Length: 276
Image 1 (cartoon, rainbow, N blue to C red):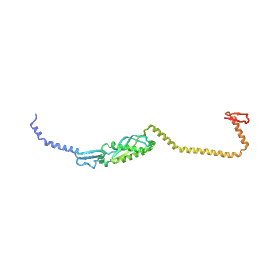
Image 2 (image 1 turned 30 degrees about the vertical axis):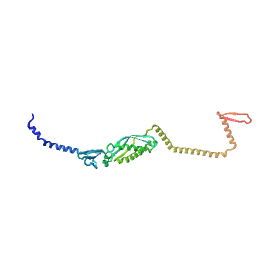
Image 3 (image 1 turned 90 degrees about the horizontal axis):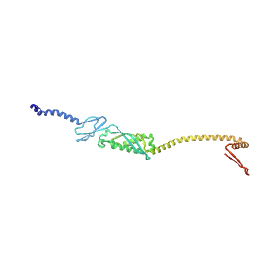
Image 4 (image 1 turned 45 degrees about the vertical axis):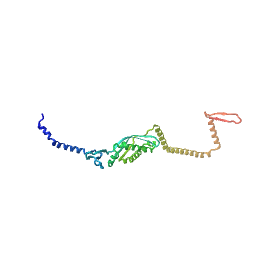
């Protein structure tokens, strides 16, 4: 059974409710009118009264007012894994799988970035620009040049610089493009590249081989000069009888060889035929 005095207490309680409820509502409103920005982030505030605030919010808790819209954006360096493709100067397909693209929003241009670019900037502007830069730079090299690992740093630098110039007006800084596994995708062309590399290696060794042949030729010329000098020295000492005797010995050696056959004819003009 409800006592009459209890009903009078309920009827007389609005003042007590107001005393308890108003501080609670005030505290809740204060919380809703504040924005918290984590470390490494920035925020752009848009209110119904003043529109977009030109000064972005920095790290910490800031009062923005009730009904304000806050876009919290990551200002830290961000990385994306990307499969980059292009064509070499000679038409060879080039692939750089699992390459790394590093970029960040320029903090001083955060408000302009939020208004002009918006969410998901990598898929919308960064990736297409980087892909186009890769195609332009790779097209400057032949397939053989691309397979030469000494050219990879220059290719990465050129891609980064070209992409950074094109992305910079979008309030984004392209920090680096690291191209991993830069390969020529065509199998038959790889064989041609290997053959070309072998020819180039052969061309590089040709000067050394030429020098070796020149040294050998000079050695043979020295031997010839020595024989010529010996003949000049011996020739005055040779008498006709000595020459005839040497000729006879040579014929005797030839006729007595087991590898020679001798046929003597009895015709008017005798002919001695020796067949080795």
